[in-house]
Length: 208
Image: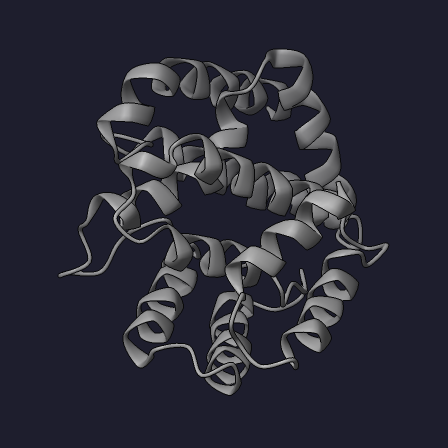
């Protein structure tokens, strides 16, 4: 997996200043924290592979790739501003790489949007919807893999007593189940919506 990630970053940052190697090491270290059981390198690799799979459908695949690399780089379960801090780091490092301002700004908006998976007004492109959808792709995996995912999330929040964790987790599950659509692109809606709702309902029932 590390070879794939290294190759992906190398291709993404081809032609940019040599400091990109230092930034790669920073990203790898952040996502390799022992406190990360789900929001880790496996998650990043999974989203990058989905981007590879649907490359031809994207107008700006490099924006999506940069967004994937940075969207969870800051992750502290005790804080509620992880996405905002991740966007700040993305802006700093991408600017140092001399990435176009328009790309940097677009990327930062998408990173912040992953906080609620709701897109702000004016950000309604297929690419933007795609980023929101792939970040939630875990919701529609097989039941076995979904159960493993719920265990990983629980471990990340193990600092909280079960009573508090269950209360917060239920709120998250209901947030998605109450949406008219979980997935924003027709591509994901048609193939993954029903499975995601079944998994979410299953977990909610288990927590009750």
